[in-house]
Length: 341
Ligand code: SAH
Image 1 (cartoon, rainbow, N blue to C red):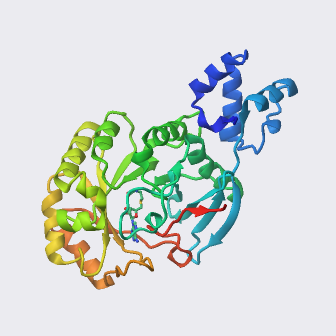
Image 2 (cartoon, protein in one colour):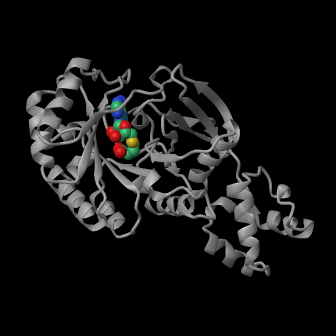
Image 3 (cartoon, rainbow, N blue to C red):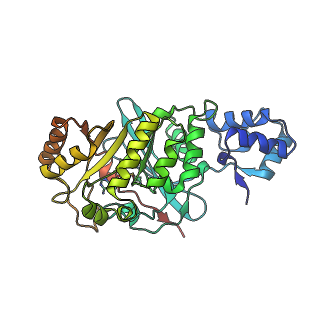
């Protein structure tokens, strides 16, 4: 099978050019065609001779997803179901905010983490996405909508830190001025709490935002909602987060989905404020999206606002995440992997 040309960082592509007996500046030309011109085929790279284009085609493929389905929510959110061309399909979501367009990308086909309230869990894990497949979600959406994306969140299907190398590679290409040229501060990586990978990420010297899905301050409850907590409990997770903040000087965003009667009492907000005290952080409250199978119910709006106000009054900055795209199952925790075979 030919390697997807979008799987290479610029330096790697330069080495590849040397390997096939070509000059390294060709890699820069190719990068421009892919990331600035967003071409569909190698044949569109018209400042490259036909002979060389043929040679490129003998050695690489330019992978372009097919759109199986595109749904538009009444709030403008768009959900894509992409055909990965190997019998699998993933979802990607485009959202519009005042400050620009945000894309929510998937990092894996399925997910191993098993969070009880998340639809991505209902189906088993198949494989990691390659870095090129992560990038292609952005490129394909930009092409299809004829738009420029300004923010990227790794909050689609999968656990990004469980596909660490490919996610970091994609981030580097997103960041590269010769790649997608989107600043790291416009990129968020969300994790359910893979502690060793948080330490590793702290050493990467990237300025992207880390989001941590916390959802509970109580180990027993968190283990019930998120099996990962049985491996890395809340205390170990918070310790890693403190290390990350210290090392990167970046604030962490904690995600907290409010589930009626499970984690949404004022007692819970008090505990949360205590747990996060002194950390440079922000709490993102997510009204839980109800997944048919699980029976978890959304907190009332009144409760959600009380929870936020209580955190704020205790010195923890908290905001409520808007529920974009819930009418087309494009909101948090509603994305699924599909099997086309
Ligand atoms: N695996 C990563 C990326 C998924 S991000 C992670 O766990 O962080 C998606 C965010 O939506 C996470 O914070 C996740 O916990 C949250 N989420 C999952 N299911 C949800 C649901 N039904 N309602 C609201 N948020 C949900």
